[in-house]
Image (tube, rainbow, N blue to C red):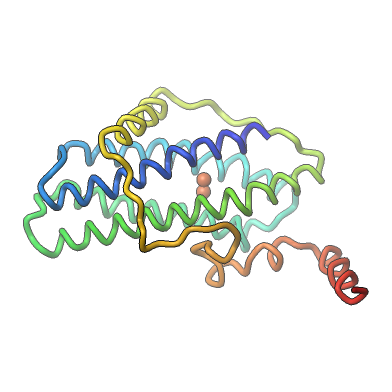
Length: 220
Ligand SMILES: [Fe+2]
Ligand SMILES: [Fe+2]
């Protein structure tokens, strides 16, 4: 599905810019880098990641999964990922305030670092959950309901500018690798697993799929 391929392409850039953001914040706290680039990072995440990418997921893909593939909107992966979009947006805005701060006091410095770690780790794992679970499984559910493609609006000029600025940020601030943090495929690494979502099998499998599965297990 073209939309899913495009969303996965977006993820490749977003995950790199997250690594650049971490490099930028560490540099800022050590007096390096251009403070004005803080707003460029915020524009990338607000416009490209938020208004374009997350919005296309919610308004096109997730909506189709609910309305056409009959998956639940109010619980499970769709509710969990939508909730993560909201929470990460709040973390982003808290970070935006601190990026305007002179960062001379200990308290805002520590808070900025913690927010950058929270935002990047949350969004990395969110991306992994989408790539490894919701996109492939969602595509299969849509296929079963004879939906093979979904129409989505093109990027606006402002979103395209934010995307290009993101590419430039990756070049200016080479992404750091977060060595203390594990990423991985499947529900187990998802930030919402066990909190607001019980995982794919419990949330999306139909009773028929469970019965078939149990039949298979008992006949082995
Ligand atoms: Fe998402
Ligand atoms: Fe995404």
